[in-house]
Image 1: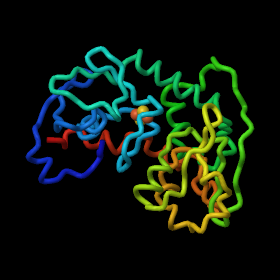
Image 2: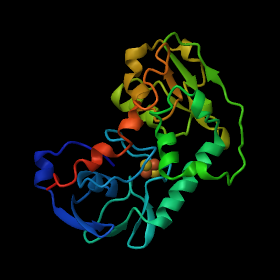
Image 3: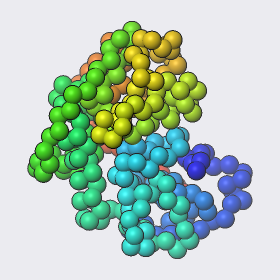
Image 4: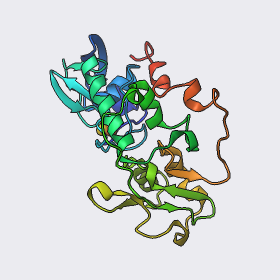
Length: 252
Ligand code: FES
């Protein structure tokens, strides 16, 4: 399903439908996903594996909403005329809190010493859903490799949440297919065709989109650490979803 594209003449002639989200009536274009329609209406649905400009993967489930009483992943589920969507309810916030909490417990996310702290979407979701208020699950503390062999970037799979955004960005935006999954089950992580980064003939520019889209501190640019002081970091200033919420009232 292709999505998140700028509006075009084709869309202008497409069927307009309406639906409600948390009781608010919103307009959509037939064929859009619920997330696309909500984005267009200025309603933010939290997400991790999805980013505007990438095809959806539908794996993290943080974007789960209820449609006519049934839970679905909004980034892959098409919106229907008259749909009643629940997004920001106590029940759904609880699901999202547990999903985010499990990601923290499954990997090794040491926020205070992570270069991505303050601009990490996982950390921002942790704060949003008060994930750090209690430890409900055991920490798995897996042993995972760090690949610092490339001159310009480093891959720390302790922080990989398997969102696949780098894989899609590398394939569809960089056109390079640098990243892919390696391993299975709980050992699945992002990698470079099973080899070290140093064995690629790829330079920094070839990985620009993949680097940019990593929501955590898994793909790190060398020699550029901790460049914003606490209080002036990206999500100190504008939490995830700010740009989408600013669209409210501007949608047709
Ligand atoms: Fe929809 Fe991850 S954002 S499943």
